[in-house]
Image 1 (cartoon, rainbow, N blue to C red):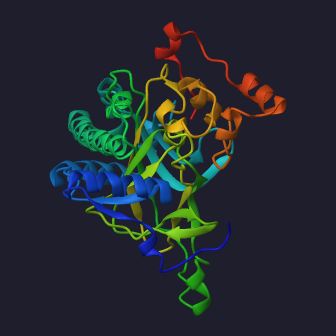
Image 2 (cartoon, rainbow, N blue to C red):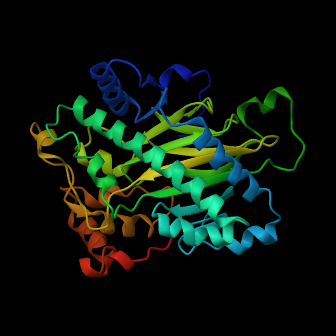
Length: 348
């Protein structure tokens, strides 16, 4: 998976959410089955909600490094720079990681902004708007899959105890000479901003500025994603792959850094409560046995953050995994009783 393909814009579906509902639901399901990644336009998230969050993000990342460090290190929420998680992953990225709980956002805002109320208002407004979008997409997916309970996915992130995250990413331009020779056309000047991975949650909603850098892996090739600040890009997460019994596949992706351009993005990770049990939906496992054993989000989250960014995690939860994998699963997954999980902290 080292080759990069250019001119592959047509591989990434664009879906207009103002279209006829039954047709839109079919297109979304087709996109989730085909690429696990798609772009939505006419999404209904107000422009001013997006701009307020963009302004707050720009204001923070423009601060001197010493001031930004006051908001970090992420424990597990807050400001981070170059170090991604605690297992040795690094990248040319600065970020703020937030839990979407309004109280958590309010607490983090005190070290992020000189005007905490303004920052938390912008963040809460943005999270609320994209959560509505996420629920709409998930219900369209349920309709397209002919699931009677169309809230089967969306109710997991509407739950008051949902564990959804919001991350602001800042990929600074690299301070070195830009090679403009023909040999540079194959990204000789690019660096890894955020390394190859799949998202462990249900669904990710991403918005970025007009600077390229995001790439997805399709057919063992890296496909550059053409940025569109007016749209949102969505990708299937590991949990949605499990719940659809492998019918959807969680797409692997990465962020590259361009040497002469600064990229900024905002990602909402739609996530169930820690205690939620995740398993293939019976209706979607009628024609084949379940590919995955049931597990809670707490169990899967702990496995995720015990591994490197690029590690494959779902194999540990395969229903037909051998004894060796079973041993790994049992040794890694040890979570507190449900009564204690509200305070259960994971290292990011």
